[in-house]
Image: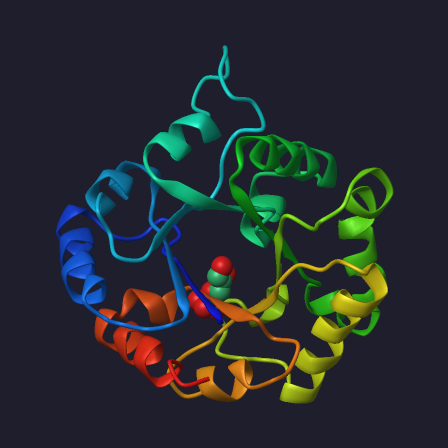
Length: 231
Ligand code: 13P
């Protein structure tokens, strides 16, 4: 079973969500499809045939945290997964490894699966091992990632149309599985589309993909689900 996770980022509106629901709801697959729309569109996914996730959450469950969204509320809305530590949040919203680890612990306590994103940026390409170990340091020292999905998303690949070679993806995901000893799924994200999804999903340590732009093209996403169904 592979994971196909659709991260809408800050895209989509009510009409788009209705269309997406209608087209994707009826697509059958043995793989796990997880859709992560913006918070206000979660209500459009009641009774969805696939799984629901969100793109972020607070590390707290309630209180005076203006503008934050409680993972408890996300659970009420049917979210079984939450993406945490996405590079856009690390970079633009200054989320630290400590904050991401706090979110992880809250989610695990609530029985929600965290999708923990890690990845190096363009300047760090040659030091990807060190970068990933720093991002996972807290998890390795103070806890574990056995309840998570780890998503490797090289920052330079996100939205750029550039992907690492299949061999590079193999090396990094294998490193995540072996070096860290986490018995959790490891997935790849960054410019995944209809042309490369099958090759990427066939790489042995790849348990799934995290898809941004291509999952917003509903017909393409539907084809991606179908073409990866046999893998
Ligand atoms: P793209 O698929 O648009 O490159 O985005 C990847 C991503 O950031 C998913 O979380």
